Length: 230
Image 1 (cartoon, helix red, strand yellow):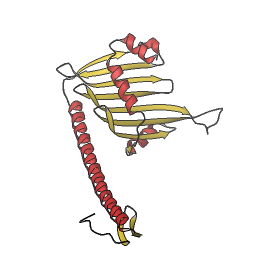
Image 2 (cartoon, one colour):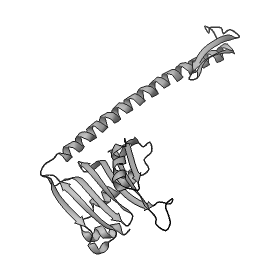
Image 3 (cartoon, one colour):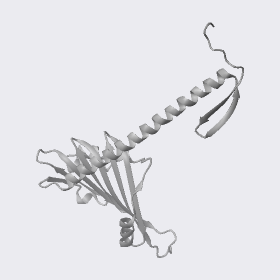
Image 4 (cartoon, helix red, strand yellow):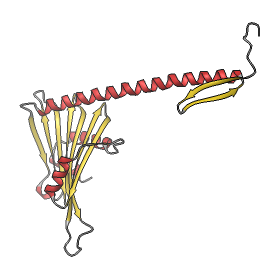
């Protein structure tokens, strides 16, 4: 074609990919195309890294805001407290819902508790404009120690905490820690000494969120007992 620059039959192309530099001996057209692909790959990598940095910064800011909202609710004065409890005859699966509302009558905090023969759960959800932004869960359980004497078995106490951070119904961070011992006080000491561990893929985050919203709709003892019987 008139005006087209002639291509050499072969040329050495020195290019780069993620795993290092290498040399190719290719026809010039292929070398040019490969070099172009390499440049595009570099630009794409820069964009991915920049996007990841922005995402991390956004998440960090969201977590900071969640902590601020949490502290504001925890330090609030004059919140009205209402409670719904199961009947004593409903034992051993006893439960309760405790709600905290502000001066406008809006629920800002809800604690649900239920227990059975082998342990119990306390879960507190925090609300902003009707949306849950944080859930704190505290769980206790016990089981027989399989290594103990069957004639005189001992038990193992396990205490666990979970923290879930939410934005627009999506869990953006999850933390957990646990303490376990034959002695309850020792398990509690272990729990307090443990650092929170990041959970990469929290399987129970959406279930906790759904449960908290379901409990928010309950308005009577009868409804609570029916829900716990499911």
